[in-house]
Length: 243
Length: 302
Image (cartoon, rainbow over all chains, first blue to last red; front, side, top):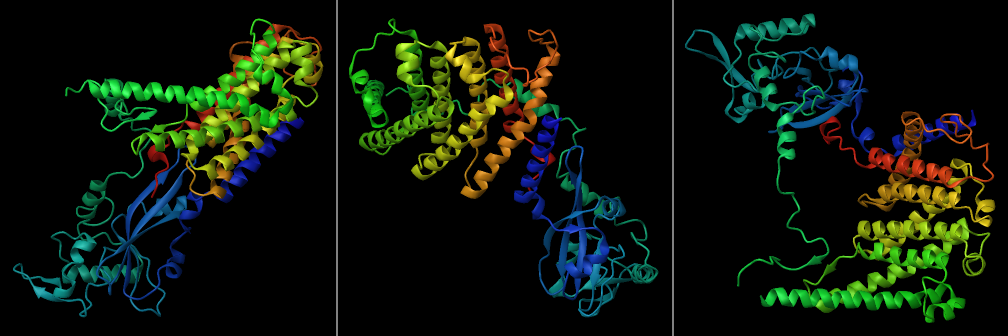
């Protein structure tokens, strides 16, 4: 019995020490739900876009969100990775590429309804205006100084119409996620879905076995370090080089 | 062709220098063992006392293991390379002999070399001392490799490794059923095999633990200790696994019964080999778990 007790104490000591001195566990801030977004993302004209979702680990999974954080006053977004709860991960599984938090004024709490990226800046005349398109509809056009915004938001050739904007406002008021009139945005969106899949997974799934590198490794007939002399270092050693 | 001959001459020259350093190593014993003056200067007859031969040659093997880690970089000039070699060799000799002195004081504090080797020709004592010497050779070898020539890091790693080695000497009494001091006095070789297997196995664990990059001394120390604790957690899985997989049965006839309360008064060679081989294999397999798993993208660096 005492051996088992010693073993259990050893395991606990190891877990405690490893947790205390681990850099991995302390690297990422933990987010349980969207209620704390307001405390993390400060400032005005700020939009947080869910860039990627992934999980690491074998049996005990750790879930992560990578956010693209964009401030209207800066020219480039920055990225941050957060550790999230499993429930929050599942809640946002369809929201990749969407704006999941935005704040217009510094005094406001912010809004965390999932909406198309860049929806904070649509309809704001400080950033753009409505232009008549050949089809007769009014489409949003950013001012010259902000002409790079569609690229940041991943719009490609998409430009929101006035109807689209009205639907965004309606969704925001009703606190209902809006993925676009024809499902353009979100994980399976026709616009954002393609770009998120193009990035590929950041972690490998153990179920996906990659045979090609394995077979290549088994059939190599030279090793990586075959030219390295283990102990004696000469410059450009080659015993068989002709004079 | 000139280049080939020239490099061959350099290799022979370095081999001669190493022999000269080994000659110095022989006299370095006098630093810690001043009374061994007569022995160091006299001729050695291996056939005369086989216990002394085991004890003597284990130290030569140990220093040979240490020298296997030294790199000779003569790219900046042959004299620089030789000076570097001499400095590292001197440091290695001092550390190695100091280690032997300390470990003999911990593990074999009840015994004296003159009594056990020269008078009683105790092969058990000689084998235990030999396994300590070889084990310390591996530890200093890895310290030299990991420190990359830095004398401060060598000293620090050596201190850490010796502390761990001393701890391992005491851990033997918990893992083995043999009565250490009594069986050495009885010259029982079963103890020698058991201890040798154990100490060489645990040395592999220590070597695997200190074999990691040093970003900061505090982090390094913590990581080494964590690896040792992890090894102690994983070790019983292999130990009991091997016993049950191969249906290993001790002399009492109870499969897998390894009760340390049941001390064996007069073990035979087979029991000693069983314990030594089991402990060595279990520790060696443990180093696979603690050292050689590449997690790849399962835990990516973000």
